[in-house]
Image 1: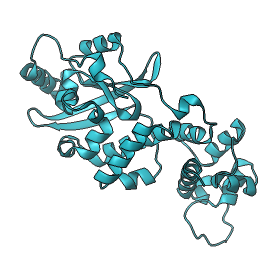
Image 2 (image 1 turned 135 degrees about the vertical axis):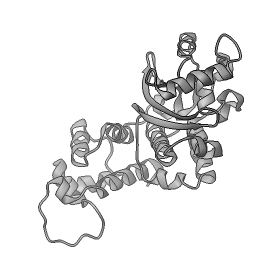
Image 3 (image 1 turned 30 degrees about the vertical axis):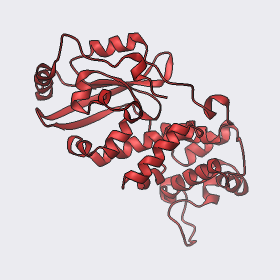
Length: 294
């Protein structure tokens, strides 16, 4: 079994292991269960395919099932939208686009101007593999100064998992770090031949105690919106409601904005932090060439 087939097999096994027959609406049959969750024949029955065919799928021996079969499996395994996307990626035919991502990502000037406009809240642009392609000054103050790092180290997952300061600054660090690993998992399913992503996973595996456990859970996630809290050494507690948007014209770039409630303690703290750390009339941005990450 090759790596791609093993990834599919592990994903299907972990998804069916979390669903009980009761939850799936199946009657008790009295047979002893050696593993948690659904058996292969039960998933096959729910999806309307033969047990033999589902077994071949889980063993990586049935290639390119129809869209109807993929949808039936997603319903049977109760997959959320991110998991459905991941399953589709794992079952898709390899294409040049998915085999090798394009060259270095560049943030167009208009997006740099947008970050400059959003100077009252933290905002940044994520690329492939959670690379930080650009950030405004408040993002660098609240998280870390990504511009001061070597280009290969400007990465959100690397910051959360390997920077000791992240554990002190990020409230609910385990949840946020685990979610970031799930985002990397989704990217790995889409780009199985991305060498830079493989190198990042290898580094995190070696240097982070928690990474392997989260990675082997096969959880996947697409960043959309939610809440985050940070502990800043100068201004204390900061509470954000973040929103993430795919950049028009480039689906591989995501604008992340950390919004705050007007008049809140966080808004006042950010205003104070902004005034303390301002070095000029405009936020500093790395040059487009400096922001390029392969």
